[in-house]
Length: 402
Image 1 (tube, rainbow, N blue to C red):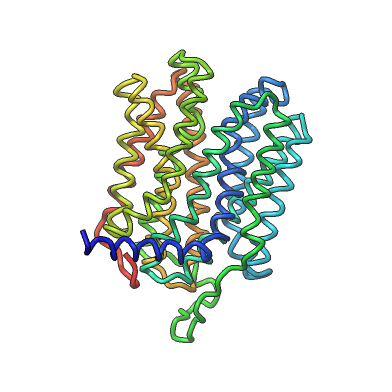
Image 2 (tube, rainbow, N blue to C red):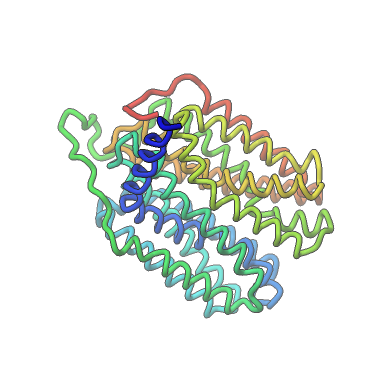
């Protein structure tokens, strides 16, 4: 008992120390992903109901957003080299907020698609630059706490959209609330600049100049493949979950919205829980275990459509969406030299986005063929299980991390 108190006190001090360092990254994930990406899922039914969008228009806006995410992720590192990481981060935050404001003023398909396409681009850029620039300057012992705080922004954004939007009477109010939340969440990114990484010595720079950061050693390649498979696996719950519950199970829109609230509740806990687990067992073990658990709970609707099973699936998949991202980012920091981390994370995020786009097309095709959402859960679970196997292959190297 007396020995555990100092241990817990030390952990608390570590997390409190990590908070100021992590705030710009939190702002990036909250604005770029939590509000910019995931707010569309609960907002889309309201936009369709008020005839801002037709069902096909909503799908088009989502597809444009996902395509923009790939563009933003793949161009983030070159833009940071040209203009500086701080400037790119601040610009991404401001443009995201302005684009969300524009969607609140655009009750038409073109304006919504354009606004969501822009938030996709800035979301990819923020997802790359915010976390990687901070983690590359963070000591290995502090990474679980810093990573957890950074990626808590995703979960908080999901939770806010899930809890607030279903209670709002009209699309205009909902859209302005999203923009206002994004503006408030962006403030820590403007208030505090990014920490500077340790200078790279001449011996640390590999042949190939500035493009050497784009090479992928085998551990990074396998981690990237596992991350891509995760992109396929998380689509059914993040795109179709509410529709599956409301339409295929016949439980109604309110039940679908209620399950999204549970999803958001889990998402708030995802990054902190991932940080605690990684602090206990290390990122190397935590990544495959998280993917395996995610495969099981994604497949749970195939086993039972009882209310408890749906709730468990909602909460745990919600928890693991930001949780897996935090674990992947922390694991990459442990197998990559600091001066190459931004480039490697940009590639990982871009490849994730490409797998996501391909997986989205595959899932949509399955629905067209079968008229059911259930095959999506099977394909997603198999992809996640395969990702767990890939992530567990014993080829990882360590650079002072877990």
